[in-house]
Length: 102
Ligand SMILES: *[C@@H]1O[C@H](CO)[C@@H](O)[C@H](O)[C@H]1NC(C)=O
Ligand SMILES: *[C@@H]1O[C@H](CO)[C@@H](O)[C@H](O)[C@H]1NC(C)=O
Image (cartoon, rainbow, N blue to C red; front, top):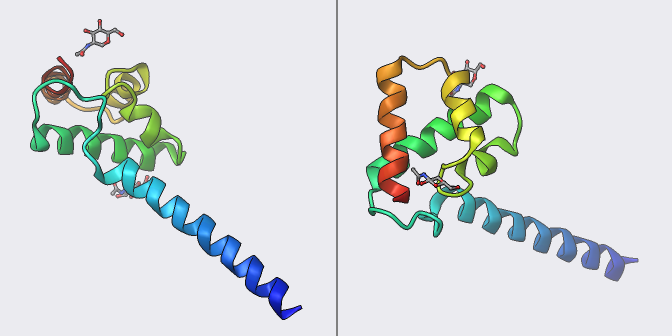
């Protein structure tokens, strides 16, 4: 019985660690899809926008979708609308995406 419990604990622990790695990779590593100009500030700005959007949609898959193809996707565009940003701010985010992905 004790051995079984230890095994279950080990499996759950391993799963949690795998998930932590996935989260880290998704949230903190410079995306390999971004093959344009290297800009941490631009990346941080669009990443924060996606985080706000994930918060707003209350859907934990939003961040990943919003970041897909280096932020060049319809979810990102939808987030710009959802967050009801002024046109000038929208334009700035779109410039960031061009910079990162060109
Ligand atoms: C997340 O959303 C809630 C309500 O929708 C809001 O009050 C909160 O400030 C938001 N947090 C961030 C970090 O945007
Ligand atoms: C976004 O992707 C499309 C093709 O899917 C490409 O034509 C376009 O140049 C990309 N835009 C940016 C800003 O990278």
